[in-house]
Image (cartoon, rainbow, N blue to C red; front, side, top):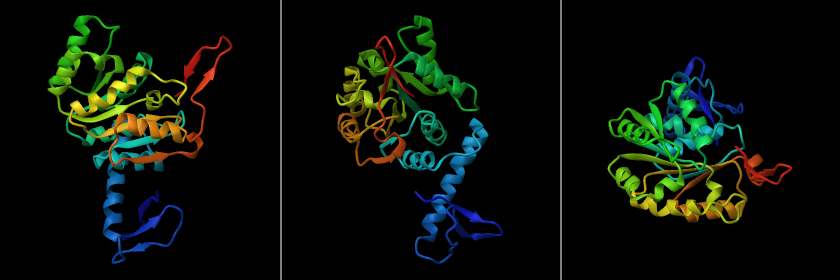
Length: 258
């Protein structure tokens, strides 16, 4: 997607980052580009002031714009490309809780620590490794509005009491991390991910953001179908389009790549 900024000394002209001629006021589409530019500037401001990220990539900004617009989005970016930022930043502009479904407690902890190191609202997790009092405090933080991000595993979403509590919350965004795990075509298929589509519908189908570092076409099609994405948008980095989803260690243990 093209990225525009306001030209120095001439706020009425938009300049394409690739060096194209200025886009003057009065040209068809000018006001639409102004609004898009303002949205991106606001997202970049939040990223810098709240999270300390001085610059977002074009792919991150494109995906964030879709999220803020309330669309379902499938994002395929390679490891280290900042996929987590794509939900963390827009969440600051959304009313309600951002629910992050992640398969491994270690991944949840990494992302929670990133949020805790920022100026964003608190992030909590509810998982089987916690004591009952820890789970109770986590739910209380979400219900009282102290926590803006809630991390759950797919297994947690099989519990009726968890679903009942989620139904009472205002869920503004559902993030499906490691989304390729929903596909039988992928190397890391997890049957628990098949529960997600009914859960999404039960919660009223808030916008869904599916994130993965690898997804060939059959996997992407599976993600869209099995998560029930509606009128979705896709943001795909060519480096990740056909990248293998696992690496094998000498003993043959499969390890998810981020």
